[in-house]
Length: 260
Image 1: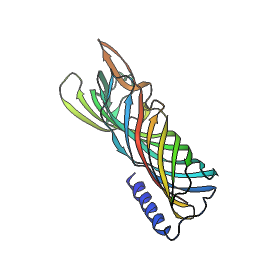
Image 2: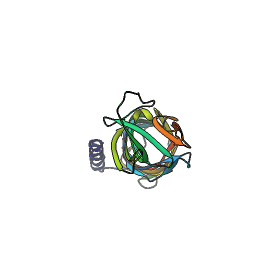
Image 3: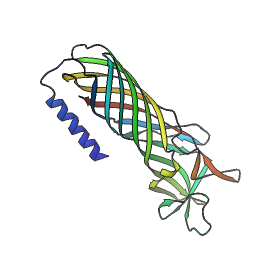
Image 4: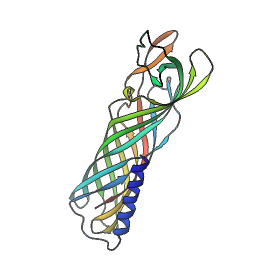
């Protein structure tokens, strides 16, 4: 992800420098470009008796995008990219799991498995997705070298991989430990969906080439985790069951890009 960030920023800088010789002009019907997406993301749990949101995480994404203008002020946008998400969650009940060879053991645990047993206190999620956005851009006429816009966007995220850093306590003891970089990909939903409402502007560099910037709120529509966990257990009043979980991904997203 660091390499993607560096390449994207070099691309944006080069496009801005070489596009400064002329400004203005009509917008082409079809434009394409690249967008970087720094963001602050967090999880919103559905059941506050079992979960508590404990903060946001800085994340980053990159998008190859295009738009088709069907009038001077309206454009349909689409693209494909790689994004990331996550957040920090406190587990308020007796939530626990088993680990063998630094990997979480799926439930039910085989009777011949020698594993460690931990109670989960806090989990920091680190997720990555292949993203497909579809948007409608509604923009003003040209004001100087600028056009301003509002853009609602529907996002589809296809799960790539998900890791977790856990604060745990050894089951039946008081020893606090950290379990880092655990692979929890199988415990997360394969698809996530959200809607982003953003506003920003286009600064025209040359002809239809523009530097595009925006800030938006991303509202999660779907559960990013499996409704029934594959490996987390919940013990309450002496009764142990598989944990039921529902987490929505929300966030603030900044868009910085170039359209040609």
